[in-house]
Length: 296
Image 1: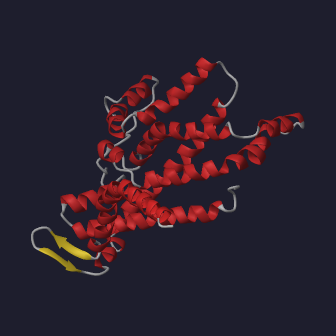
Image 2: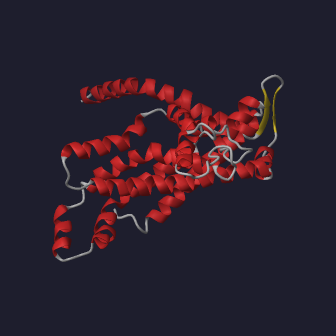
Image 3: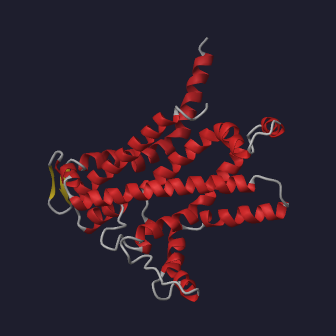
């Protein structure tokens, strides 16, 4: 009677031993920093003189400061356009490549669009600085060749954010293209063939058949792209350092500057909490809205 329970306990101990290393790493490098950040967000912390409790002062400072609100707006603006263009262009490319064509040509196009995804963001940003240069940039060179004036891609406050979005779309849209291609291949062929035989226009086939079938994948891509865009850092740091002025500075850059540049650890922690709550809120809103158009 006791042998099964002893065996079950032995199996449980073995399972706990396998889970223990991962649990320790998670507690040490994920959960503990999150808890510490939430505590520091309500404190003024100086590595030299210690800390003191300040309540919501750090959050009040963030939401009452015009500069921080401008940076918050920059982050939201970048997120909206980056997500919109990455997901929509990725879907358009997937639709264009999900058709009959020579296999070598199909693989060539898929590889060409996906290749930027596997290149490090820092390296891509460095390369694009040569494209965006005012005087010696590749793009402005060809604009002048055809008689058009050069554009101040990174040094004009009204143009810099657009330039960063263009580079981000060039780098990341191939990822969503591959995801959508996989989703499109799961759409039942017999339904599409029946729609063709009935004379249904291509645009109606897409909105009435294809899009409802791949709507869960579209939702996943929107959420995934939103979380990544809200944390944008490397490309802006390398291309513009957040300038001109604060026109392209993001919340992630502000956190680093306040925490490691000005040693305002508590304020940086508060901004981190704000960004985390913002990500959770946007994801929750997307989840609620998706119930009306995502088919389970």
